[in-house]
Structures are given as structure tokens and as C-alpha cells.
Length: 222
Image (cartoon, rainbow, N blue to C red; front, side, top):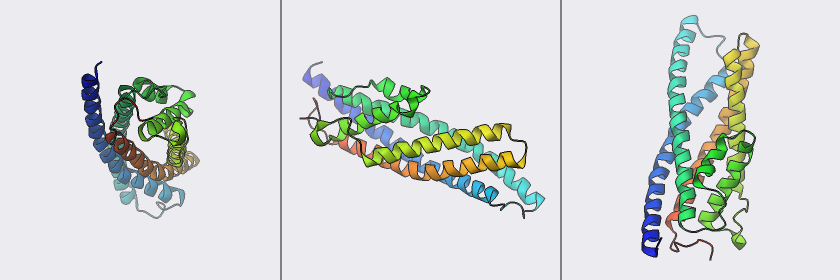
């Protein structure tokens, strides 16, 4: 690829990243009301807040809750897909710009999220290189840790693990104790999500801002 082709291709990559950044941020913001709804419901159940409600009130609330749950599922699936696309484009730009220290393909930067066991640490390592490859780091260490990344990944794991426990518990729940455990896990997942989503928003914005400021198409490490 000659310099003109590389520069043109790189510029196109930055435009794509800006596009997916806008959509990712919009969807992250859209998820917040659903998180707050889950938080309200779990706090109410765990603290016995529904016990004094009338039968009609509970029935109406159950109908609303079911509708919100289906919409929330759709928004979550779309948000996950869009965030994955954002990761892919951000990683592609590192490859196109010639950041030689970047060790991941765009595909595997996303793919590691779906590999059991490895998804507990490999996505973080890939994102760490995307972050440092985009922004640069002291001494040019592309594997340097950053506080924002640590909190992002910690809250990501907490949200995912607690959410999985909640889902599996609700799927087989029959007695009050089962629902109590499910809502307790949902409470943890909701609280972790309130940490995760604002941090993810900052991560996406900062990586995009860093890549948009690139002037050297060959490498951000001089």
C-alpha cells in the first residue's frame, strides 16, 4: 500500500471510528434508565417493598416489568453488537496506522469476549493495547495498565458474573428464596453497571479522541 492509499484508508478508518463512537455512546446512555429500573426492582424485592402492594398493583407492575425486560434485552443485544463493532474499528486503525507493538487482530480483539476462561482476561489485554496504542504511554509500553481500564474491566466482570447468576437463578426459581437470591444478584449487577457504563463511555470517547488527533499515519510511537 503506498502512502496515499494508506493515508486515505486511515482517514476512512477514523471516520468509521467517529461514527461508531457516536452510536456506542448513545446506546450506553440509553441503557442507564433500564439499569435504574433493575436497581429499583431489586431493591424493592430484597427489602420487602412489594409486600404491601395490592394484588392489582403487583399485577400491573409485573406486566410493565415484563415489557421493560424485553425492551432491555433488545437494547442490550444491540449495544453489545455496536460496542463490538467499535472495538473492531479501533483495532483496525491501529493495524492500518502501523502500530507494530499491537499484537491482536481486529477480529480477535472482539472474539476473545466469546471464548470461555480466556474471556476473563484476554479482552482486557486487547483493550489495554488499543488504549495505549491510540494514546501512547510512558516509555511506549503498549501493555501499561491504566486506572480507567482497571475499573472498566473490574466492573465489566462484576456486571457479567452477577448478571449471569441472576439470570440462571430466575430461570429455575420456584420459591421465595430463589427469587431473593436472583434479585440479590441483580442488585449487585445493577450497581456494577452504574460504574461500568459511565467508565465505558469515557473509554470510548478518549480512544476516539486520541485516534482523531493522530498526525503520523505510520505509528503513534515515535
